[in-house]
Structures are given as structure tokens and as C-alpha cells.
Image (tube, rainbow, N blue to C red; front, side, top):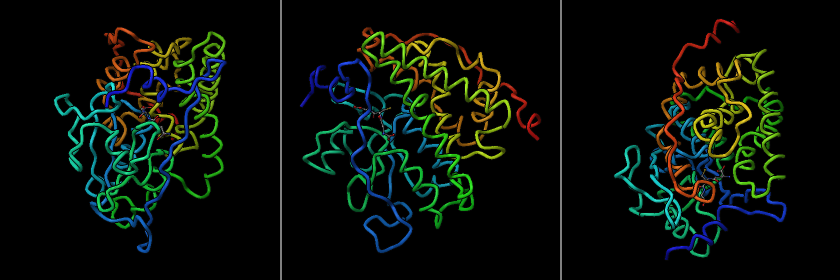
Length: 320
Ligand SMILES: N[C@@H](CCC(=O)N[C@@H](CS)C(=O)NCC(=O)O)C(=O)O
């Protein structure tokens, strides 16, 4: 049954009186575990990721799947557009796939397969258990922690630890304000429905970017000389920033290309296997601008900007 535009708006936003965008918590919170006597034990070919290449949260899981060498272990399908009924498989759109596991058309159908009383948002990413035919988890922050450790028996990179014990406090600290002010901050700016809510959100976005610029003038990555979870989480917002957040979400005080260190860091990551090769610029530009019609009612996709993520950045030499 098709939802009306009004219902859809309700599922997308929770706007309080203030006009502030408030994200709803994810609902499926189970875990894949490396131990065999659990509900969802790690196995080769048992789990599947449903993603959108436009979505920064889903993008985290795609990067982890590559970095951890799990491409032959966990399969992926990508929705192609956001319809009246939410995310839709549209294999005619280049870079998208059909639902190769369950043959469905909408993400909604998969959520209802997992729980026929479900009445929340039909979000990506989803980690799906093909054996139990259900959703394990739909919270990217938790899915990436599972990919980091629980599939190590099948991973090509079992020794790569993106959340190492000795850096956990530092990573947790970075995640907290980077999530609030940057990852979710751009959404708070773009989806604000009052001038005050927008003014506050956009200022917080740029104060946090300025703070990251300072950190990245001292170190190659957020915690030093190695990539961690904090970098993956920051990257998926940064790579979308000039492409869509500057215009579509009105985060236009500065661009990433105006920050020497952030811009070099973004290219550094883009050029690292797992990052640029999971970034689909067309899906990012088209899906945001064609589907979020409350903020871009005509659905017209802007022509630019023309950005070269592949130009040299010099950060390896600078931080030897
Ligand atoms: N907390 C979730 C958020 C996921 C999320 O909001 N995904 C968006 C796409 S970027 C979505 O699927 N939205 C569809 C909707 O809200 O109806 C996570 O990080 O996994």
C-alpha cells in the first residue's frame, strides 16, 4: 500500500516544535557472533547487506566489508531509488541491483518479513540472516563493530583492527562529537524547519569541521598514523559534503576543498582501497536531490561541483 507524502514525511523526520531534526533510534539490535552456540553465528555466505550507495550510514558497512576482506563472505544488494514506499530495488539504474536474496521490490517488504508488526522507518543498512530469513541489525555503528571482529575466521584481513583496545577511549570521544555535529549535524542543518534550528545546526557543523581541521594539521588520520573506525565514520560524511551537503543541506559557510588539511585527508582516504571504490558519486548526487523533495521540491539534480578526489595529497610524506 502506497504511503502518502505526509506519512512518508512522518517516517523521515521527527520534528519537535523547535523545528529541530531528531533522528529515531534503530530497532533491530541483534548481533552476529563468532561463537557457534548463538542465534546468529558467523558463517561464510550466511549474511547479506542491504545498502544504498547514497547513504552515509550504509557506506560505513561497505567500507568495512572491503577493508576486512569480506567480499566473498558477506553478499550485498543496493537499492536504486527512494520511492513513495521508501527504498526500492531498481536494477535498471546503473550501480543498483535487484534483491538477489528474497526477490522483493521494497525495503519495506524485508522489514515486514522480519517483523510483520514493524511500523518504524525502513532504513538501510540492514544486515540480513539468509538462514533465519530475518534482520539481524539495522544500526550501522553496531554492524561495523561486528564486521571488525566477528567474521575474523573468514576474513582476508583478520589482523586489521579498526577499533583497537588502546585507542578505544579516543575513538569513542571522537565519534561522539563527530556524529553529533558532523555526521548527523549536516542532517540537522538540512532538515531544520525553522531559521533558528538551521542557524544553530549549521554553526555546529562548521565549528566541528574547524576542530577536525586542527587535528588533521597535526596527524595523518584522526588518531595518528593508522586508519581507525573514527576515520571511516568521518569519511562517509566528508565525501558527500561538497557534492550534496553544501547545496542541498545548505551547509555552505565553507566547502571541504577550502580546508587544506580536511581536503588532503579526504583525498588520502578516497585513494585508499575500500574508500573511493565504494563511493558512487552519481548515486550520492541523484538520490539525495531526487528523493528529499521537502527540501528540493522539483527534484532537479545540480550539475556540479566538479571535484577531483584523485589528485595528489602529499600526506604520507608530510606525516612520515
Ligand atoms: N541509525 C541508522 C540510520 C540509517 C538511516 O537513517 N538511513 C537512511 C538513509 S541515509 C534511510 O534509510 N532512510 C529511510 C527512511 O528514513 O525512510 C544507521 O546508522 O544505520
